Amino acid sequence: MTHRSSGTVAIRELEAFLVLAEELHFGRTGERLYVSQSRISQLLRSLESRVGARLVERTSRRVRLTPLGERFVADLRPAYETLHTTLETVRAAARGVEGTLRIGFQGTFNDHIVRAVALLQDRHPGVTTEIVEVPLADPFGAVRGDEVDAAVVLLPVEEPDLVLGPVFSRQPQTLAVSAAHPLAARASVPAEELAGCALIGIRGPAPEYWRRAGAPERTPGGTRIPAGPLVATLQEGLTLAAADRGAMLLCRPTAEYHGRRALAFVPVEGLPESALGLVWHRSRETARIRAFAEAITRTAQGLRTGSGPTRVARQGR
Image 1 (cartoon, rainbow, N blue to C red):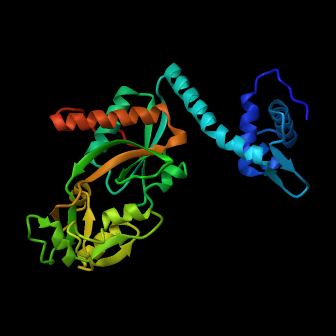
Image 2 (spheres, rainbow, N blue to C red):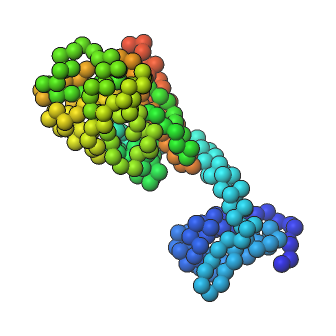
Image 3 (tube, rainbow, N blue to C red):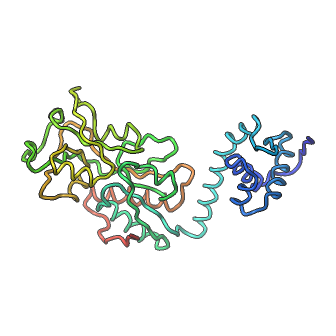
């Protein structure tokens, strides 16, 4: 293959190669980029000519990357995503922050988030918001699946492909128990007494570390905590707790929002605080997300000082 030393690699060539590396099919790659299959072949030949070696092996039966192609993809993708993010940032700066921001939330769309949305829309009138509930059993799936742009989730977050932005609403954890439970009348409960409760856990695709944070196996002193039933939704867990089938650890805003006669909510002393955080996908950061992250941070500061916006947000439910 003749090496062409002059000329600059076109962004379209790199984009076609990256999509082809995902699809391993020229037809599907063309469909995704709205060009013909022959155009994809042309872009690939041009790129390989610039590189001086084959990046893709193509037969009548299959398409696959060469070892050099695999290495090129691994090195190229982070740089391409950075370029994409930079371009989005410049475009947003040129036209101002505008467009739709899809916000996911777990459990309760609490006052802190409502105020942050209000502040975002006051500062950036060109932004509209859509509010989407994120499944309790899958806190990160909606962000990864591009169903939402960012989500407010319970910590901890240890996902390498996600960015953890502002962390807020740090408060003692609360135990939801049946109103008839022996702990229901207590003003608070030491964490060691959880050894006498069967903790309701979460089933589903949530990571193990995240599920264990909400239903620990042992007290801080090392005593085993009985495992209660597993649920997929918050309502399932609260219903089982009300029926005295187990107890459920919640963040305080969720407990306050879901108060009901059949349940009692008791603060737990000695456990790490619950906290909420804003997360988004590392490769899909936008000016809208950054503006919302800033609004959450400023709202948190305002709540701590007793100031801040109080107008109800225009939610896109």
